[in-house]
Length: 462
Ligand SMILES: *Cc1c(COP(=O)(O)O)cnc(C)c1O
Image (cartoon, rainbow, N blue to C red; front, side, top):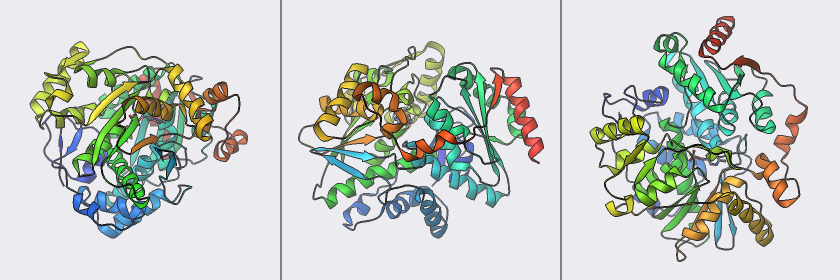
């Protein structure tokens, strides 16, 4: 399989280069040249394990030998605390696909554990190094750190806004003792962190000299790893005698998770409906309901991993929606950059695309959903998952099975849960962090300061 850019300005590249590059050099996103059909795989009625299924789904996309790939997949999911990796929990006719059984208790582990192993494999083959630079407002930083901690040939620098992330999430990052992990507390906002990261990546000489790479959610390997659990939900339902078309509800921020569902549908999984759920930051819900994609102000909510206005993975969907036409994608993205708004000629649902429906759950609806799910089933969803359940209740097709993606363990967001339910939800993985020593380095919100710290740190390590 070869990979091309959504904006047409890149010669086709192989899978390894797609993983290491992250973003295409023309500013576009890397997409596969074609989408393989896996319907024949689904016709086999075995009971594949998560890792067996992952191998079948990845094989057409990845030119790594089968034994090596199998080993890489097995190692990526060995640290999950459930034998199904992503178990399906049924509450009446609501099925929750729990994606939070990895080391940091959020769904990002599913992709970042695999990305860490892919980096390890590719860098060893090429005898090179990679120094990852990331900015985080919470979940991504710890999942990225857990993906590469202790690995040879990789270091990771993670910037977070000093004092502005949840204390628990900060401890998840700063208590990791491995010598290839560096946390930077930036004296500024998350936007400052992101701006510093982008400006360092634009500094081409610095980037090359320091072998900088990225783990952000536009990396194709992250989307690819997430396709697997849509198939896994289907096979788990079938084992329970529930077969045929189904619908998924997906709490959405950067559009990575739900995009994987879109690819799964294009690969032949019988998905009748993808329910896109946002919090008050609802640029995507507005797009799917009106055809207008317009940037707004970011509002802070109790589901912070979805507090995003410009969804970085959206461009991939646009590319497929517009009939794989890179000229139109490039023109639209340039217009969006310039004006903050683009309109598609028709609402997506009018252009033959009927897979997506979209809605918003505000804070009151989210809290009410947490209370109601606890009262009715004795199950406490985290605030992100609750956004998905709330929107799904309104937008589901009542005649089809419904799977809601459960994207984080509630203990990660214990503050919001405690305020709502009046009791604390804990998890031993998080409780253990309380007594561990923390390491971080404070820096002002300036590109030069961060570049200098990276240079000095790496030269010491040599
Ligand atoms: C990142 C995240 C999301 C949003 O996923 P996207 O792929 O960015 O749409 C939802 N819930 C949780 C808990 C997350 O960490």
